[in-house]
Amino acid sequence: MSDIAPPLLVDAMLGRLARWLRHIGYDAAYLPDTDDHTLVQMARSESRVILTADRGVAARRGVQTVLIKSYVLEEQIAQVQEAIGHPPEPVSPRCGKCNTPLEVLHAGQAKGRVPPYILRSHHEFTHCPGCRRVYWRGTHWQAIQKVAAAK
Image (tube, rainbow, N blue to C red):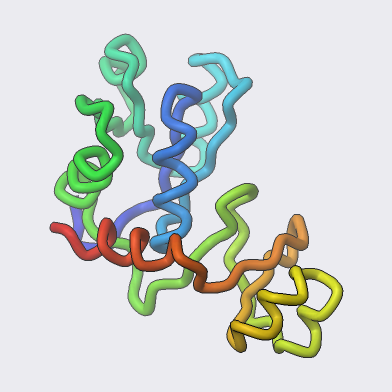
């Protein structure tokens, strides 16, 4: 495929992978309660590539799929990067819950939305305009960066 990743549709078996892909900038729709037929229809109508661990879904005609072969998150991400390319540059992280692109949130706007100790120790925040979650570069951020950089 191309060097820049197309939008993805992640099947119900790969929820953790979907969250991580969103954090590193992929457009990764995840619908855990969707049957295979609807999943394939959605992928076709939205020109999304299906990431699946289900060989039956991966064998469907008329839709692009990547059969995820590993249970190890880092290996799954490496397989996605190799098969479909890297997220668009500049990387725009997405909400881990709802896939909406995150927006900058000023520290003053984060007050009351994050624990006080986080407000004291962090100065950069993002938030999801869709589900209103607030994000900051906590201890998990180094792990996300390490996984994203592994190619």
